[in-house]
Length: 188
Image (cartoon, rainbow, N blue to C red; front, side):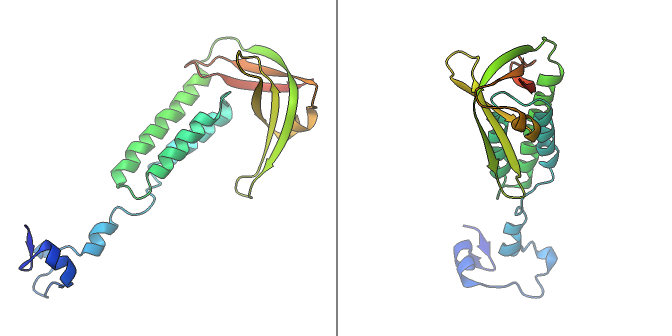
């Protein structure tokens, strides 16, 4: 067992023995409080490019089933709480790869979009705190097999113009990487 100041490590931790003046900074003695505090904090800076890049890419090319990136972003962000700084760098790289994949999925999609007419089933407004703002959602009849409806995030202008029972035209893109995304949504 390793000894510190003539005591075994367990005895040392319980005794509260402090180093003497002659045992200065070159004595290889590290206070327990500072040794554990090196890896604290959010380590946000390595994550920032990936987080903002993902948000930007999702704004340009919103996925049809749009919650996958959100789940991944939240998972990677909270994974970092209490972890070593190197883990935040790896997670930041993973987020940057996700952002690049979302951008490439939309930017390199050369297949002409399909215009689909769907009937509005329901519409809803979700108001969060000032931080998260108001979100507008329109539920329409699905054009995909095995589904009864699709959930579309829209802006306030589109939300005001759509009416339940009327049709909307949805621009549907296949996606370069096979992740379908939505273009313009036009009310009747």
